[in-house]
Amino acid sequence: MSRIAFIGLGNMGGPMAANLAKAGHAVRAFDLSAEAVAAVVAAGATAAGSAADAATDAEVVISMLPASRHVEGVYLGEDGLLAKIPAGALVIDSSTIAPASAQKVAAAAAVRGLQMIDAPVSGGTAGAQAGTLTFIVGGSVEALERARPVLEAMGKNIFHMGDAGAGQVAKLCNNMALGVIMAATGEAIALGVAHGLDPKVLSQMMAVSTSRSWATEVCNPWPGVLENAPASRGYSGGFGNDLMLKDLGLAAEAAVGTGVPVPLGELARNLYALNSTAGNGGLDFSSVVKLTQRRQ
Ligand code: NAD
Image (cartoon, rainbow, N blue to C red; front, side, top):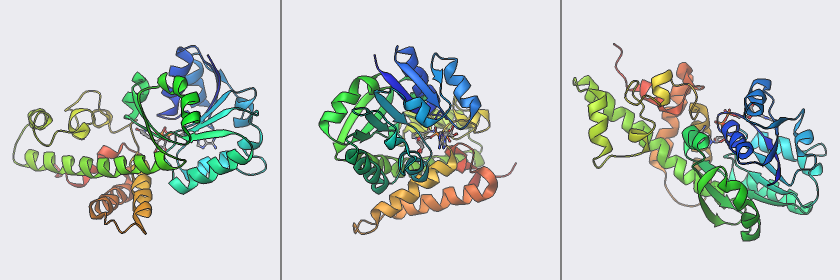
């Protein structure tokens, strides 16, 4: 069992840290939100007063923060966490951030003699709660093997994609496809409903037909189709629209200079931007369906 510092206890980090505590690891947890810390303490973790406090004596430091600027802000600089983490500790960043940002932080960690992997996840909040996440890893094989027992307490699939930043590239590929599929699924169900179809039966048919996907089966965007989907609780919890917007922006940036056209990813990015300007930025990204739903 390891002494683990966990920074960032939101929709994903909260249940991930809770699963580590439940697996018997000694977890010291920090978030800017006291409420988020309290939820993880209830699951067996210890509260820390700052990121540096959480990292005291840590063997493993894990971060699950919103975006590149948060990760760079926490780790880099004279007051940054890399300067405070005990020698020999392993650093795991599971946030979804720009590949270049992941490489920058990993290089700064290496200068301090710390091994670091980027290990963004897939599986959503349900996967985080159930401990069935997929970890998409960039970094050395040696660092991944050190991380493996800790990752296994939070997930069931681990993919090594390459060196530092490669996990982030792969994650962006996944989320670009997911953003497109969610928008397309919502559009299709809206069309069916406008013709008088029952969205539940339509979704059940799609879930065993050629358009089947996570968007139909697990996170269906239509309210009332799946009891446990964010759509059925006012699009609360889940994966925020603005986080998807961020990821599609990162995917578009990653495409620049490669010569690979990403027209659907760009279109989806604009749909999530429109959904954000409609006031739905904080809702689950499946609320993008609101753009195509007919007003009753
Ligand atoms: P979230 O907004 O729910 O949580 C982020 C947490 O980070 C918040 O609790 C916030 O208070 C905390 N935070 C921000 N700055 C901090 C700082 N300096 N120190 C300590 N805590 C700080 O976001 P989330 O949904 O948990 O997502 C986290 C990351 O995981 C994002 O990069 C997201 O793209 C990615 N992700 C999310 C999902 C999902 O379904 N929600 C799925 C896969 C990946």
